[in-house]
Image 1: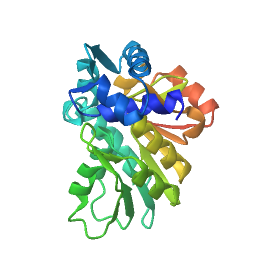
Image 2: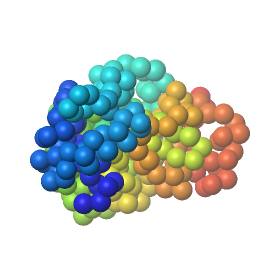
Image 3: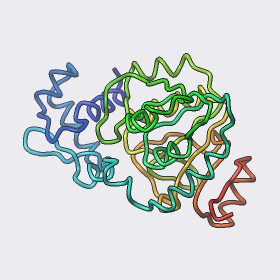
Length: 252
């Protein structure tokens, strides 16, 4: 296991727990306490966790950012407008991926009576679609990340790698003119696999996420076919369109 994989595992182990000791990290990852302390210092500099005497805890700022219960109601009207626009891209007979995220949850509300297949790791999406008999729901397995109410890990990744879908509706924590980012490394891996499994990638976001960076890079704009947003700076829009990205603004 190289250094990046080990630090990814540290983030995964810490997960939604309040505190993990150096001893536990060392035992689980089969490395020395000195190595763990070096890794924790690096992750603390990146704002992922807080070092404490004998261990580490989640950054309160990071913990707040990660829980979907804190974000679902934020910029709600903007997210609904984005979701409404995005729903028009789905045709009957399509197979689509809807991942974990607050905007993608709003998208689900516009799918009633659609004759489609929805692949999702989002437990809240599964709940919303459970009574929609016209929609075939494919639920991805794995470990539940309570922060986003999404499943992650090897089971979800291997399932997605075997799929071919029409559209992937992707959420993210932040975006700049260069990259789209997530707050969780493990979830990022799944999003990348979803990109590779899809004929078309549609990124959904409200403009409050613009110009910001989260911890883990999902992809560049080269991997995005369509960007659906509530509003966008005209110059930024022009630059994206020059890269071949279709931009759909909810203001239009």
